[in-house]
Image (cartoon, rainbow, N blue to C red; front, top):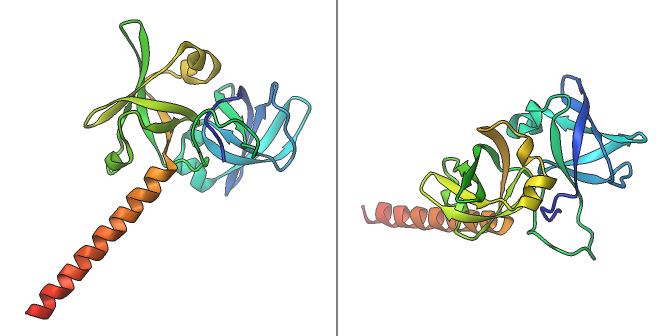
Length: 209
């Protein structure tokens, strides 16, 4: 579990390919890590499999590479890093599992001295978003400032822009999205209720025939 407050950014030092996964080496900078620790890399939960003096290694399996932007990383790319939340830590953002829902295309825009990131809403995800609701973009906990039919906007403060990878992208760019955990559960529950209701109604109609 994570909170969406990026603790550091790290540079990709090496990527080794194998049939089922990639081994990725990332500089750890100020992070104090141990083998076996969970770490969110641009919002994607990984396990640290080994480390050296100034870097650590994770294995990203093929499903992760297909579903997230981790598969598009290159040497010297910058990623957001956050270690797993401890029980006594301050929850400064919102609950993030590190299970990326999907990717989408984002643009960084300046509007009247404010910086925004504008993100296309993936088809079928409309009911997972609300105005002033929470969203994780590349592992960053953000608030939806404006919600439109096909896009949503998040305000990016100067501190976030300075201490995350958002200013390192060439836009438009593909970013990782994780929808609010509670929204996902409620949405699935309501869909299940609706389907049961439709099934019951269909059965009643068939019995009346």
